[in-house]
Image 1 (cartoon, rainbow, N blue to C red):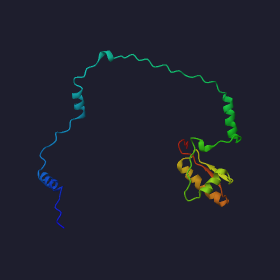
Image 2: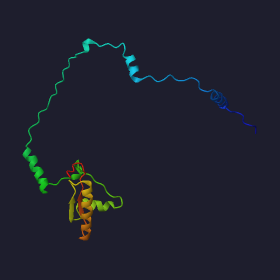
Image 3: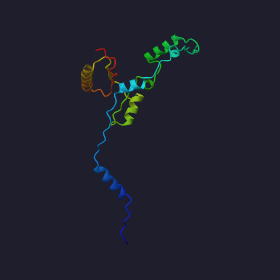
Image 4: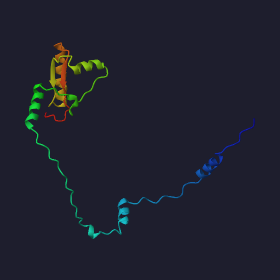
Amino acid sequence: MGNFAYRPFESLRQLRNRLSEKPLTEKLPPAEDDDELFERAMAKVREIKEFREIPYRCPRVSVKKRPLRDDNSALKRLEEIARGQRPIDITKTQEYVEWVNPRYRKELVRHLHRGCFSVQDFLDLHGYTRQEALEALRNFLREARQRGLSCVKIIHGRGLRSVR
């Protein structure tokens, strides 16, 4: 077999070597100041007097009239929810936040959601500062362990409206 001498990029290598030997002598002009550039571009712009005041009428928006609702029925439903007489799916509310530690089986969490475990005590942290909440949580968990409780509920809030 013969020697392959086909080298299609050889001319590019030579061109690159030639170009890299020449130092760059051409300098770019300094960049123009944005304000000066804008002033120059707007130099011949003139106000159109007819456009000083353009009459504009807002389109009329038709408001559909709804029948008046009985606010008493809404209040009655809220009272029933508060007394536990009407079920509510809190997972569908805007305030619902949930996180599950991946170390625990999903089955355990499902049982918690179904109410298979009785909550033996709870701690509501609404209104606490971060430091107060940490201290209250430590004390609560220590006492729960000492009392032998196996299911406690912690209402944590989000710390957005803490009064203290």
